[in-house]
Length: 546
Image 1: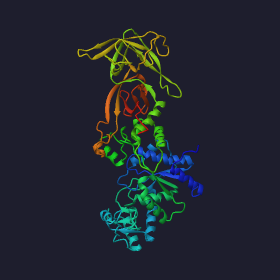
Image 2: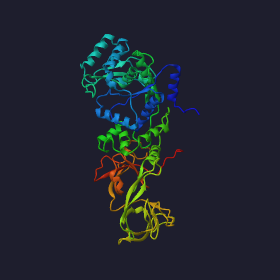
Image 3: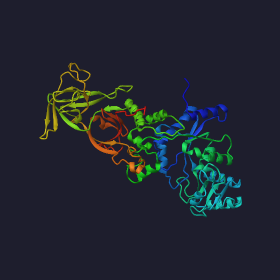
């Protein structure tokens, strides 16, 4: 069977076969104005995946052309996120590395009569732009001489004019059916200190002008971006052609961006949540940022697997949130050790058991290599209150009066007495241990269907658990605005009692709390206070037929 390929790889194969390119060179070009989110993971997997598949190269290039919104903190976070996801770039570059090149390109366009300085305000430019059905109106500055445009542009660079006083526009076609080609602004005056170049510049290039120059200057062969840039491609091609870069020129290819139900894919709104204190920061475990989902405990392998499974297409669509969770759950089922944690403890006194012992309990039956841990067992234990019913329904297989249940990795116990308070609430269970029923050595002959988790009362640890939900509620009555859908109850703090082995866990260690879900030890933990974040529940709700 032929290897399945996406449309981007088909284009690359054709370019290699025709001799148009001899080496594949891609780039990942984030703007350092926020943290990367799960949507960026798809672009990362595509660009670095192509590098791996074709033995090519991939640069990390920060598109830092807007200093008023960018910060070195974001640069460092992006680098960490990419490496966490399992990728390494060939060159670390900045758009600001090319500001001199971009300035020279702008001068070349002016000399060719293809760019002019305009005194119009942003509002005036917008009003004269026209519509999809009507051509734009030419700027009164459009026919300035080359000499005047050069003089004004150098004065812009030298700080003569305040912000917004003048812009440099490409001179293309005000009647073009593509509004992006109607004399777009390619430089603006902006007196702002830059994180990389300091105060050297007070004019900065626009993204649509800078990006193709960066690609061409680096020798990028395939400039892969999301679908919203499809209408910008004619301008991309115009810039690299008119700036007279050598062949082969980079080729822009667009793919559908990743959208996930109930997931915020807007850096602007994510920053708003951070700035307003509605979350604990960019790496809050509820945040869909890569640093957030890393803190939540999502394995990087599961993210790459998810991106591989959803594929690459030209049509926008929305992926179910449960699909991502399913990929995470599938990975953790193989890799996360099982531990016992009780969220609503009910004390059980084993009336006929004296002393204590260390039980050997299997960590993960699904793991390739089986390992075991030591779990203390003594006369008093805790089980979860939900595992006992005073008046059980039919076919109830957990503990009940005069009933049996197996304690995971330990013994079968029999409930002899349920102690209740004046209101009839169960406060304690008195049980007996069935002789010869120890796990792995069971010869008692009693068959039980129920197996429950438990913790030793004398050695267990009190832990804090963050139960997490999406930051957005489901779309209801057509309301899609993020502000109205913000889920104020997306984090619920509960306490639990956990087995002793968790006391030696390190931040980032992932576990399955048996019969409950998957959890990760958070960096907020201290020796005397363990804090766990919920990763994902045990139940898989993904339905591929939906």
